[in-house]
Amino acid sequence: MHDNEQKGERPEMRRILASLAASALVVGLAACSSEPEAPVQTAPEAPEGISVTDGRMNLPAVAGNPGSVYFTITNEGSEDQMLRAASVIGADSATFHETAEWSGQMDMQELLQVPVPAGESVTFEQGGKHVMVFGLPEGLEAGEELEVTLSFVRGDKVSFPVTLLAPGEEYEAGE
Image (cartoon, rainbow, N blue to C red; front, side):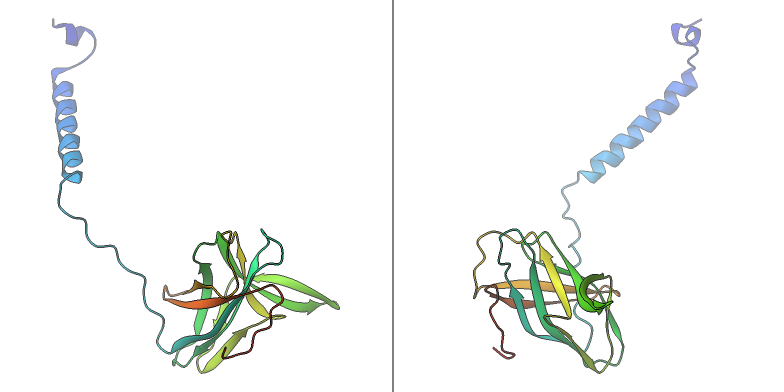
């Protein structure tokens, strides 16, 4: 009797294991081939008829606090659209919020989605809908610009610049 057979191993099992190991090696080497990878799919374009105007961000009065983004989004398309997310280059996160009166008190609530009906505009403004921006990079100054990207539920995206405003600075539409 062979030593392997005494230990409970069979020659057939060794061949199967060797074959599996060889197959794994071939697959692993194929993954390391020098052929270029397929190009990464770029982000989809904005839905037809969507435009964004009057983008601005109020910087926080206290460093480390969130900033707030305001703009008007217009849907001149024939289909209703639904915003699902916002992001700001350089910031940790951004979320939709709305300030509204509840039981005689002003309250701010997070919005998970924002409808943008066909043929209408939705205005994000102080005292109403806005984007709260958390974890802003240090050193931002009034007059600079950042890029905001809005994502729609169907995967489309639209990006636009926002002008940074000093805390409390008033904004005139069309500036």
